[in-house]
Length: 249
Image 1 (cartoon, rainbow, N blue to C red):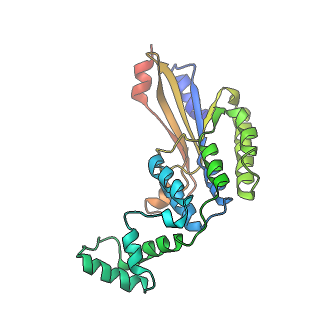
Image 2: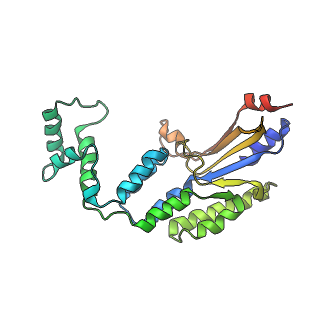
Image 3: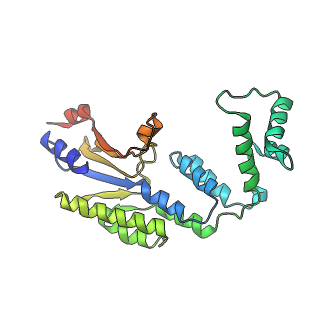
């Protein structure tokens, strides 16, 4: 798909294309190998697309449980030592809070129960926080990235993701592309929540500033999120034709 996008842009008359890639699969694999409760992984994945909220959540997981006070801590206090659903219903009635139509008492109680369980969890280790931070700050020439990834850990999931990453670089070469000219950024794609793996963007210089003219990637969960009965692997790209037209001589 990267080759297709670049070929289309070159056929339209563009040259000196700059390609940036990211890989959300690497981040998910890094979390998979990290010692933490599964609910923490789920919440970090959910907030990955919101960098400020992600940072706050990561910091919160690294704090001692006594320091993990949030805006809903008082409601967690209310269910401590009680049946979660009954206590939640009583709390809503006491505060005269209307129930949100798409969230049941059970949903709210489950969320509060997770927060209660967090209080007895061991804080996320400092070296694990550092590893996540180091990965998210990772960027540079694409062909230099595998060696940097190898220094982040050798867990089973991450090792498998690294192998796929290296195979993608080889696939780019097999397509006649030069991955040494490509740039990698672990942070790239964080604003596009539907992507699940490789993401890319193609830019050209326009009036002394880079202009994105194409982008795409893998989105294996998109169709299921839209109502499909099963997960359907998919990959694609979009070309901003109006931008292409604007930069053509």
